Length: 489
Picture: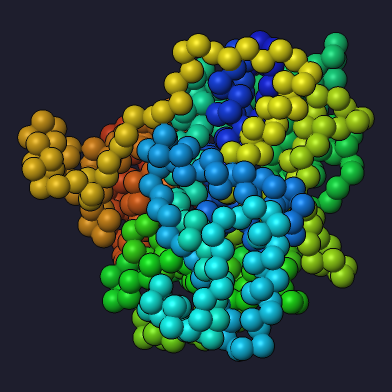
């Protein structure tokens, strides 16, 4: 549906990743007319779905940098915020492991930076302590961070947006900004779904934030896409990893090195790599890099050699570091344009952007509040209704739900124990997202051992029951259709 004319929005956020949705949720505390524009068919379709889901403590970045400041501040906020929104998360701790004794000095350097930034309770530990803290890990020395954790990044993103919408913000999918005009002190943002006027714009478009800025005549930065590839194990692989295990960061690597991370469900994630690519949408998995991921992970955790993996995937990091240059560190950019007052750009928001998101959101609200009166809403609701997965319920509660609604008794995904009731609820989300990947991110359908072999036809049938024509069913929108040609009835 194309809108010919829209009301003037106080703030339009461009980009539905974790940072954009955190900004929207933070601003929904105030009496503002808010809109978020997302180019894809669902939220968390870009950087926010292709990461490790680690809540970072803040010692991997230089003290005094914006990355460090927002990371440490975000660490102090994110656990409470996730609990408030009912998002699965767990404080696990983390080990950064030195395989050789001579690398102890590198760990001491990381601890020094962390101490300067105010990271709490960092500790250098020896080989015996490593085995006690994480029996699967190997190393001579390690830096132990007890406040590191794990979270579902896409569920966190969606929850932030849902909370914002229940506080009267608006989210519009499949609405890429194609042109930016200026009229009467307002920004005019042209999209396929209409033109929207805004007093302030927050550009949180991830890898495309520099392209969006150029539409407004702002050409101060260039984003360089780096692809990070991952492998993920079956959750019943026979190993139980308790906490993330990282290597000492390689000197010549633009990332933190190949690390090993547990998921909340019991899978083990290996990766990511960090290779510069030309295409901001290039999320291919490559044989060469996957082999390197296995080899480097095996040095930290030899028992990984005996397990199998069910899936590979990749994400894009929006770095401000030119691959051809010598600089390996690029800081976050959070600034209002001098050329276009009211236009706030968020650029280079890569790791630790997930942890930093609540702090960046509060920073953006402060920037807007410095230029206009922000009146808190007396009825702001910071929470979201708690949604416990069927897979996590006890037998009595399962039986009670099935007795009240037969849809709770129809299993759609055997691997992850997802019911028809949960799939239907996912399709009836507040944003109108109705792709296979939208269901996956909300329910975990297709994330198990069979990778959708059992549940895909069942989800297709539910989509048809919900009024989606079979020829319009897609994996993630655009040209990712599942069916072509005539079908027999």
